[in-house]
Image (cartoon, rainbow over all chains, first blue to last red; front, side, top):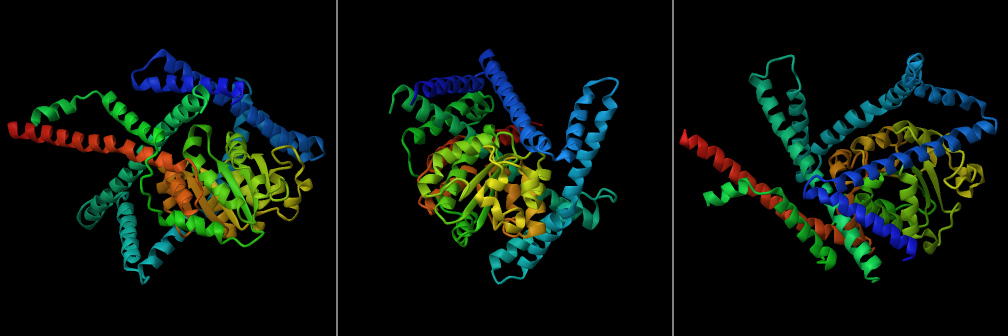
Length: 209
Length: 278
């Protein structure tokens, strides 16, 4: 490791330990590390954004792509929100961004996220593989009963009540699946932090292994 | 027993942290090599890449962030190693601000040149395309309108690899790394539905339920965080960091599962005990 790498490893290790100190209790060291993290992320994000504006807008604009002046002006208008008198003008770029976003998204929602998935589910019920067919049937039942849980225009009694109750079981199963995935994810972050501390900081930087 | 359970109900949460940390550290210091079964999504992931015809174009969309880099890195590294071992073209772009830094870091670890790949001829990296799904759609529709230069400032028309590639129609496979759990919808809506492009996903464990819904219809396969990375390393015989992380995770989960079970026993015992008293 070069001296600068050793120095940066020490900085990272100390910041990691400061963050981990939160496990003991809330403290000033944790707060400092948290603020450093937020500040660094904000600084890096700003620089990347400026660089992106330069490469995707300013440079081509200077080379003669004059139409790019329109998104540039719209981008500047977003910051007028900070002005009391001209704040209303920031609504126009917001309108463009929202409209474009929704327009881009809507086109394929039905095909990609509803019809496509339903088609596959229904088709799988009729395949030769019993396991696949039963799984697909469970998914279909889960889909219909979960949807029925969200019908609020009719009281959940009788057939709809039974369906909604089954739907609630599927929703809870889904929540538990998401929660366990979340738990494994956070554990992964802890593992990574300790891998860095042991393999990089202690072994490489301190012991020179 | 009752006394033990009531004590358990009041146990300091720091004991749980301590047990977890101890169990996590053991495999990091001394790898255990616990058995891992390769799942079908990982096997499919491997098969899709290894069956790509020579000269295929692979687009890689980097959407990870530095805070979640540790979770996705092992899977990305295993994927890069696999891709670069085949005669395919590789085009990477970023939809997150941290993407370019992470991408450069990972490529420096893999070293495409050691696989005989040449920058500009066999692989190219583009920087940040801000705008989320709009950027994904823009890249699929017209790469030249999304980027005028690569990450290092070379004009796109001067990059040999890009001479005949300008949209999703020229792409055979897209691999997306995402940590915003619903970002997999972007590729499904902007690449799979309009262009029928093959789609592979790499994500963190917590976003896996979202992409699993698209498998295998819209998403041909996916790697769920370090678990997927470990399986991939075993399947493709690529040594990496995934195995150690998985060992540590497996052990680290033990106290959590134990405390969930004991906590529930304590809770129900307390609840039913009160009802009996009434």
